[in-house]
Image (tube, rainbow, N blue to C red; front, side, top):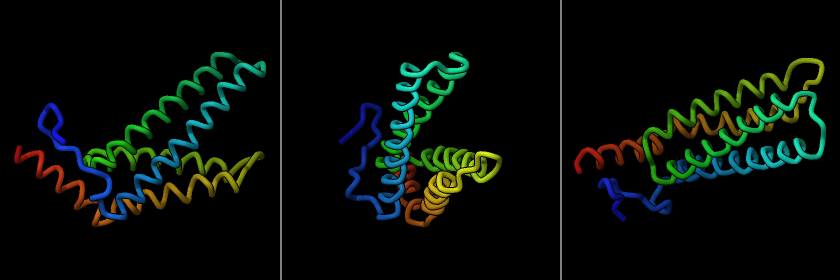
Length: 145
């Protein structure tokens, strides 16, 4: 299929398994963050927050992050080269949150590991040779057109 600006869309079944695993990881992260966003919406309506402004701001940030993960996952299926940098940025942010869950009076190591493990796996996948090659090949194809 050709895109209006001449860029070809690649089918997901022609991707290397590492890239498919990365796409799956991004979709899982999206689904979880979308669930968190729905929970935050429910809490905003069902409970009285200490600060409505803060509650709304956190909800808006969660929704924006969920949309961003969906954009990354969709474009990872298309093997877009810029997805690698966006994915690394997201995973670093997720690692930072995980580190926060390991510390403090209300530490939650279970949540910390649940955030840390997929982030590390995604970073390893982003820097794997098959993912780099698949995305570089598309970039070369774009330049030829």
